[in-house]
Image (cartoon, rainbow, N blue to C red):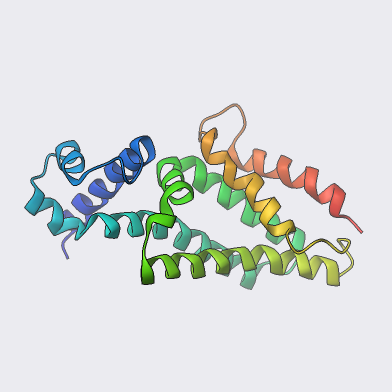
Length: 191
């Protein structure tokens, strides 16, 4: 595809994310999206295929980005606490810069059906496993005490909920907030 096609498709996805975040997936019609981006139904479908395809693309893009970061950290950072910090900082930065997309992901991915929903769940679990692996390594290495298995869900919940309030240009950077969150938790996890 051409650069122009990619740019137009990215614009449609960005506007769709903003509309879905504001009005919900089910509360936003294709006509609303077409009006917002200035495209007729036929041209719009050229870029998106279907409304569910848009929801899948919005939901999967940032998750894929975070899995890429997590994969790289797993290969490059042996220290589990530093790996957790890298994961946390990247996640908070990404949520701050892509609030609409994360709002859609957290609120709407369950509207996906069949294979699309299954792929999102698999990728979300893969991402969570990076956090779990870092925590488990920290326990094995004697840095952290034994933790409940649900600790990863609680830890990620603390970060994920930030989509409601974080901004990239707040009084503290997303990375500083991530460090503060982790500092509070790691003190309690220390062996």
